[in-house]
Image (tube, rainbow, N blue to C red; front, top):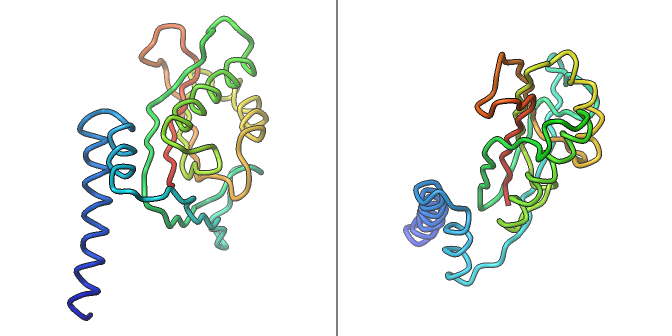
Length: 169
């Protein structure tokens, strides 16, 4: 590889990694956004391709077994839960997705940028059908790679669902 091309490629990787690490270390998506904005770069949507190889089926419609992503920035959304833990489960899930949407928007992203979701359920068999219904209101093809996990409890008392997400811009 010519030296000039190698230096340009290395600079791009360094810029991406330093921005991602600054955001993680500072605990703020704003740090990464500010770093990129300060360098005068435009935000562009990541290219997402659903991966559906033979022998690796999705659990249900609305899921992709894998996602190939080409992008510049990573947004990691910590586990979110509903505002009202006493509401019916569909409402709790919509509230949870709305909270995730607010965090994504703060980073200049949307649900279209989500490439991975992990959902944790205290009552997995009871709540999974409602979750599958609600998530289709927020997510579009290619659907993010996803994992649903049953657990005995979550960190916040009374919480029955918690969802985390990763988005690429």
